[in-house]
Image 1 (tube, one colour):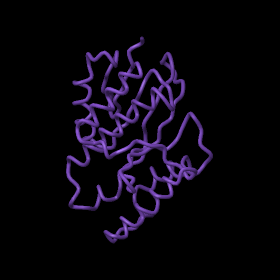
Image 2: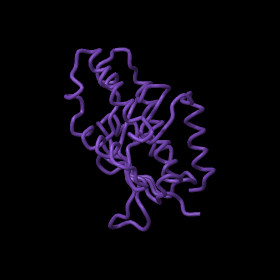
Image 3: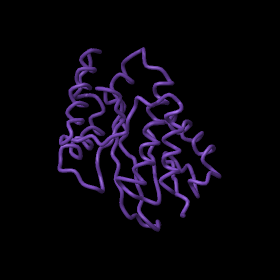
Image 4: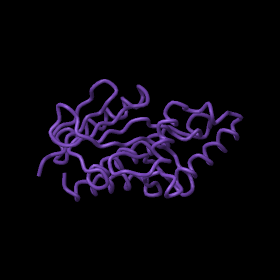
Length: 193
């Protein structure tokens, strides 16, 4: 996939009104992980919920990655809007059996507690965050974590439906040679130039 194809995906997402959201690495080093931790703890308290009970298995994996020295092959990335971290996930790139070239995987996707507890959060808000996460992951496969293949793991059956629409739209595009749904994963293979 060319750099211009990656930019086109990002521009398409921005044309949907998502320009205020950024996809960034979240680490202790850049302060964004600390911001997530403080903001999400505060959000849980606002809804009389315990942050220690909020997504403990995923957050324990992300916390270790975000607080350790950063590497080029793995890290925590997220959707940031202003001072708010709206979502976080693990990205890692590696050679995997059965693939020629590297594979970038998105796992442990967690959304801000506001998505779990607030009645003001809409489906459109959720779609905006997932779209930004998708476009950011594709951009990472071109820049920070170069990879020929991308695999995205879903949080829920609703995510599967959302990414099923992406599959239909992206199948036959010049950017991806292969787009497939397999269980709870969306598999993308970039077109070789």
